[in-house]
Image (tube, rainbow, N blue to C red; front, side, top):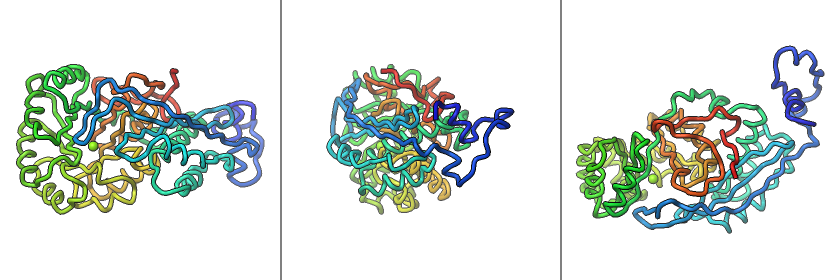
Length: 377
Ligand code: MG
């Protein structure tokens, strides 16, 4: 196959008079879609993201995030992927490297058989969700590019229905918090990290500089359900719209009680990892926070959103600190969600991709094939 136009001819992805010139193709679907002599080539390399600010959660602080960048090349076209590995998720350069070394895509000659390919990747070993996501994202990018369409269009989603994204304000001194809030002026909703004794002070500090709606992420930091409920009533008065992972994920009964009595939606983050977890948090939480690095990629994320919707739950899409590669991939799904927390690429100083943009606070999808990115470095 000489070039992309030849490929599109072979796949039937061109229309009009050109179709008349197409040869009659014999054989099954595999013969129809691909040139069997072309193989997929998979590559990966480590990269360290530099964070603009020290990032502080209830449990730890850090200034860098390790990521693994991946590529799948097929017939001269490259799909890009990424595994972001914040330490609390348990993956790192070594685990991801060991996993990705085993990924041999040369056995597949048809990238369109995504179910087969991703089932093979999933079976290499359990866990390793970020590493699996890096293959899933690269494959989606490749296939979208081969079809010359962005994934939101392939899935039939309306790009006008993307939500506003929140911008995360980490735990910090009042001066730095005020500075970060002012930096976040383009965003219409702010996400505040809570889970310490200074929670009320943090919210009050923010309220001295802005009246924007807030959402809060406690990262399992509250320990007493009654104190948590009192805090949630106070937060509602402060203009908070939902609360993410208020208590440790193991405390299912306490969280179910909190959700039942809370005036605000309670969203599961640490408590929900992948497809098999969605049913188990239904009835305990009001909604789920889907992240590609937790669940293994776009395929799993889409299924999770569908299950949650079928169960009447809210759906949020989030991210880790990531380049625009993984964030833009997640953004393709965002028209399906109630809330987005897709600011991970904005928190780093050494992005190497251009992709999704935030325009007037809203997730804005580029009309660009695949996951919507171009490599800039
Ligand atoms: Mg969270």
